[in-house]
Image (cartoon, rainbow, N blue to C red):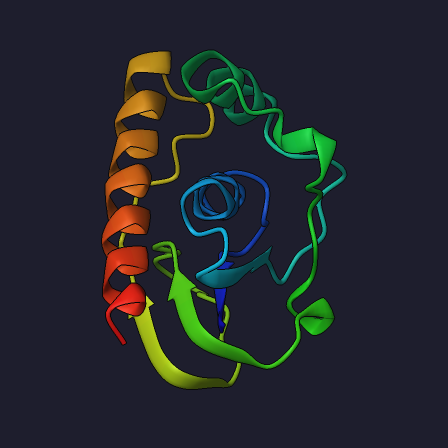
Length: 132
C-alpha cells in the first residue's frame, strides 16, 4: 500500500480533515498520515464539530496533531496550501499542493466548502492510486 501524508504547518485543521476522509475512503488502498512543523495541543474544534455533523466521524477518537518528524517514509506528500512556509519532507512518488485556504476562524459555510474540496480531492487521489 502507498503511504500518503497530508501536511501543513499546524496539523490541526485541513491536514487532519484530509487524514480522516482518506482513512474513510482509502481503507485497504493507502496508509494515511498527517503532520505539521509546529505543535498544537488539539485538533481545530470547528473541524471536529463539523466532521461529526457532516460525516459522523469523531476525529479525536484516533487522531491528534503530530510533527513531520514522526512520519515514516512517505510515497505521496500532499501539502494543503500553506502559502509561506509550507513544510517539506522526502517522498518517493509525488508531491502535490492542494492550495486550500485555512478555514480556521471563518464561518461554518466557508469551513464546509473547504471540507467538501478536501473530500473531492481525497477521493480523486485514492481513485488514482487504486489504478496503479
